[in-house]
Amino acid sequence: MKPYKKAAASLLMLLAAACQRNELDVRNSSVNHYMIRSTASSSVAQKSYITTESDPIIKEGNLSQIYSSRTKSLPEILRAEAFNVKSDQSAQIYNDDYKLVSGTSTALSELGDLADAYIIVNAGHAHLPGIADYLLNHNMDCSFVIPGRINERFHETIKYWAKEYKKQKEKSGDSVKGYATLIDCHREYQLEGPHFPTAEKLQGLGIKRVILFQESSVGKIEKLPEISDLTPIFCDYQKAGLEIYAYGIDLRQGSRNSSNEKGID
Image 1: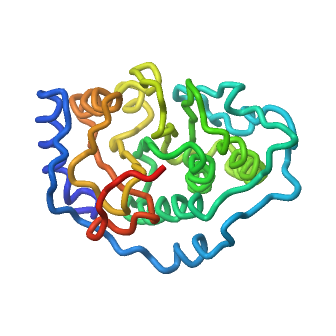
Image 2 (image 1 turned 90 degrees about the horizontal axis):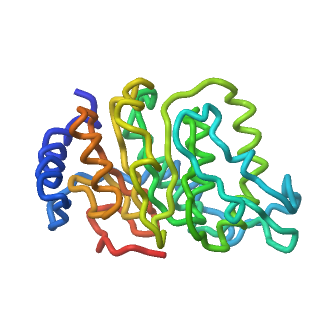
């Protein structure tokens, strides 16, 4: 049995019960956790507190074309308000942003072949571009869904990652190995069904696993977190026979065996 399948039965039973109640069980429980690999942290976390791109690919303008999905297979929302950058906005990221990328690396190491995977990344606005770049590097097709207000620091990070992201898209070409939707976990709006692909659409793309990447301590999550606008989406996927998994990807909060599970902005 593959490592990522070990908790499938218990997670599906929990989700089925949650669907019947239309809520998720978030009581404390024992959880599996995995080691934070030194290779991931050494290549990502050991950076200066602020890293700046001195020669961004676009100093002022709209970056939506760079960050658009390669296949257009899934819904995406690339509002000008979110993807327009100005000349007086720095192209920079913080060490915190690197830690979410490193946490993503750790999660992917547990998931094996991604060809049958659909990942929903529910993380802070500023972290999303770096995570998307890492997923794109693994040939995943990424779709940003940002229908409402975004934090100003998002502009700094999309400006920073744009050059590398464009390069990765050109390198990947038509090769796709799994799909991802990226959403802001600090959103002040509700996401709905049309913001996500239907189960039928995913199955038509060869997807068998739906995986939540959550901004929480690193490790496999045995009980899905309660997220009011995502719960119905996962219930629909589960009812259609898709396997549901969840992973924390935030190295700032450590591994799941030592975390207090409190969110960090």
